[in-house]
Image (cartoon, rainbow, N blue to C red):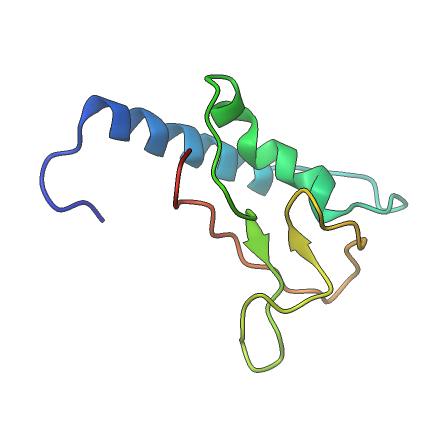
Length: 99
């Protein structure tokens, strides 16, 4: 949500984050591979990295059985090396704090 009229820079960054989200959403990988959050994180950041931008936090977080976020063992971030398994739930929240 934006209060006012977004500047061209804000529109560009929003679009790049959106493209990253769509790239992450459309990622298909083989069933027999052990995919980690660190591997997936690059898909989300690609369009920001192209112009030397980034955000200073993880892309997504594990969601626990009480719907609490930041719950491991999984997540989408450069330091998340636990492979995803069937039944894991992960949020995607990478729209904040562009560097």
